[in-house]
Image 1: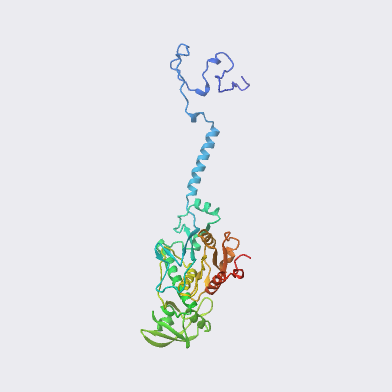
Image 2: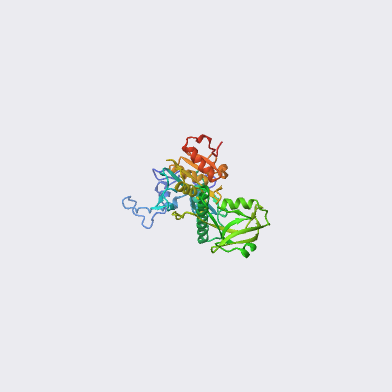
Length: 402
């Protein structure tokens, strides 16, 4: 017995512990307390009552119980935390589509005119898969896994959609962008092919335009200069001072008339007519791709139309992919998700990727192995690049790296 009055002894897994002093050997194993002592018996081990087993959790030390409880609480908190929504969109490589081919039996570009040449190869538009487009539908777990996946990208939700927009509003916006890009692609393609594209008033916007113009008016001349296509209209307006008056010749219901119109100033300080426009094409063009939104397929749609109506087999047997918005005058603009689109293009067999030059800073250094990236800023650049590839002069083409 120690100075403090406690008896010290060791417990082994083999024999019952024996404390010093008389009767120590008759004490039950403390690891099996409590025991049933209502019938002490006659001392014969055969007739002694069997001790009751103690529940496993009663044998745990307090420190162990504390650690287990803390670990359980941490795991539960982590599970809840990882399911919490985050204000991001996860972008992944999406499917690609051949604008010269079909999807589910429907041609992507439908023109009632047979090509003048055999079409070989593919011109594939590229897409991005987006997860979390419904606010709060992307979890922290998705964010963490996406962060460590080199093929994915995380984009703040507010950079793409207004926070309080509904799913219907987002879908309508995306669909409208696709339709607008298809119209611009057709206008740019016909202009490249030197085919007339009639420019019509879609909606007067400024007060001056509302006073003299109506929807469906066809624009014929500005200050006496003929409007053969949207590019011609843009060139004419570049010569006009913002806020000055112009004479506009229009066709309305088969009759020609001239009106005076005060121009308005754009954000870039250029003169504008104060209208939105639409186009009438010399050949009807329809598009058969559904469930894809946004404006970034414009450049590849334009190349597909040129291939189908023009004299050259643009792809030349290769699988060409690309992306980029396109204006009606043929300018190719930047898009989002360039890295994911390059990955998708390589996955689907593309050898060459046409990238907007404005996206080169983001694309440089991230080109997948075996995919040649060519930087372009206009439809003219893109067609010229494909011609260089067909003629074996690809070394002169500019990429995004180096």
